[in-house]
Image (cartoon, rainbow, N blue to C red; front, side):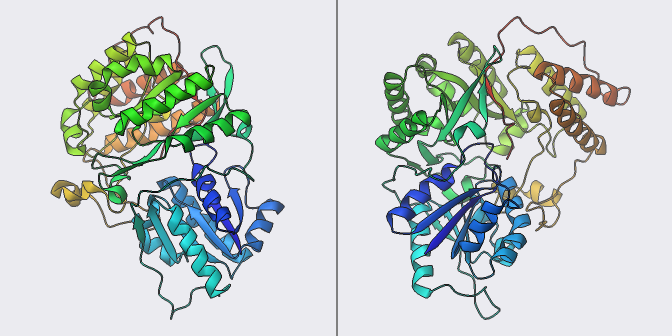
Length: 464
């Protein structure tokens, strides 16, 4: 039986979410094709042929953007192949069950999806190539598995070469080919806004060390000079994580990597920051979200503004670049708090560290979000928008929402024109100054950039 795995978007990375289940399905005897629509558009002859030949098609849905794109392309997929069984898997599959079932995905799998995908393929093969789901056929209830798996080494055969994906941009302007892997999935923490929480609910699962090392080994052989670890928090299991990067550094001393680590874990394991740098860590992404302690408490982030400021100092002492991420626009954002956000970034010397898109991010409240536990959130959101896959909200001050739209559009235009991070920040600073005067708080004069080397960054902007 022919199984087609489709990724619609995964932050410019070669999709681990295709390569991992492909290994399991091929081991089980299935003929597997992988299609990354971010690099292999559906209107290409090869992509169309893969869809037509499939008996079963599964969409990888790891994030909000990927899921919305999948809903847009599903009618075209169904037009090309009216008989294939359809499934969805990944974090956003069980979270969006009604919309995905309505779009024709019969089976939805979350959590540790590999064995469940194999079981789905085996059921499909046993039933034969059936017809499209009809009114007398009920879709399956979403499957969320938290089983502890013995992973297979991801099989990346058929995916576009790593050279076609996002690269690591170095301060001297040179670039490195970037690969991608995962050392763990899920997360121990229960941050209210995080999409991992509704599926994993405080659990995390490790990918065996030998599997991770072999996956990286094969990517290096394919040209990777840098590896992104996609773990929700690399220090959920710090011993496991450090064993992997130390082993990689011994085998590939020139290989660099980046990781994501919570602010509280950077504090708790501050002694490991120098080891990260010594083993080739190019930068650490950390989800700060806000400088407002009240907002941080609502989000249950587990840190304060003062905690993050301590982390900035610790990272500089270790010569370890930080790449903070933020949600600056929330229902609780005011003109004062946004100007304070910009001022804090300038004062901490982080203008070059923060991807410009982070200056315009708006809080996303998807189905299943723990934010809906809060009475004040339930009172401010509108009915669930099945097309946008979110609960809409408006800021009490319409000027804040207008500023967010202006900042977002301006950043997109300037980045398209090749502006530097510092130039984009200065433009946002100036625009905010004009919007806030004379009705709101004014920004002071922008302080000069500290004479510090620009940090490495991935060429694909980060957003969900």
